[in-house]
Amino acid sequence: MKKVIILIFLVTVFLSCKEKQKEEAEFIDETVYLKPELNDKSANYLYHFAFDCLEQEYPNKLGQVLGDKTYLKEPSELHPTFFGCFDWHSSVHGHWTLLNIMKELPNFEHNEAILKKLKTTITKENILKEITYFEDVHNSDFERTYGWAWLLKIAETLKDWDNADAKLMYADLKPLVELIEKKYMEFLPKLNYPIRVGEHTNTAFGLSLALDYAKKYSPELALMITEKAKTYYMDDKGCPVTWEPGGFDFLSPCLQEASLMLKVLPKEEFIVWFDAFLPDFRNNPAKYLEVAEVTDRSDGKLAHLDGLNFSRAWCLYEIGKALDNEKMINLANKHFQYSYEKMDSGEYAGAHWLASFGLYAILKSN
Image (cartoon, rainbow, N blue to C red):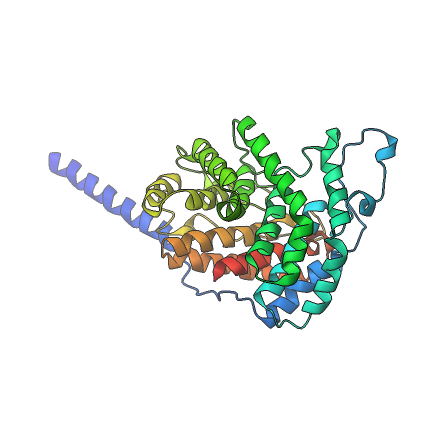
């Protein structure tokens, strides 16, 4: 009888192992996907999305709190710098997109036209009006922290760039940069719990982009972000990445958090943290993430999923390169390639913002 029980046990173990191997094999994608690169061809494709909408005032989503009827003004009156591209934050990262194309490709054929346009939006007078908007009691938390983070990315680009025009633009932008730094410093001590969603208010995203700037140019802010990141996320384990995506997501809560912690922790400490946070992910990332499919690119919320593919890609590039993990990098390429050509669908719902996400992913791939 004992031999029969042992035999049954061994057969059960064998069959379960075979089933596990079968399940894992189903998730192995041996296709090698092309890594993107920024060159004249891709820059020509990307730049026109931001360039064309930078001064397109309508349609426009203001996100404004009205104190009284005198608040009702044209978008370009309220935001003389960042009034185009449907909403404030998209205009901000539209500027970032054009600046980075100029910075990375100094001989790009459209640089002169881009610079001419940016000189009309980023001016001292315009920036002072942008500051006035933030100083209003009813709108002091405007664009917190998503738009704030992208504004600091513009500042980072301009300060990194050894270029006379960049220096002049930064001089005009500086008062708004300083205001955003101050707002981060005031807000983060009051935020006891991180916001773990796949859209604009995601805390990890807002901290991650701001930290890129702060590490170079704002030590006090960098220290605060580092401390808050550890407070929020250090003890996190088993992030439910297979629950993603949400139907309207353009950020991955799990990957954005991992991207931030990669910037905060020493490499060896990050590896220990990451393996507890996303167990087995390094071995077979394709088992846990599938490319997000978009059903209707005319729907602004559903079109978010193209952005998710790009933001997943840049996180996977960051982490994959840090850990020398080609599986993650190839999965990043797969996500990128799915949505890249589809940006040019003719739908403004995606056209007003996706080029920034595409470019950011490209820059992270190299």
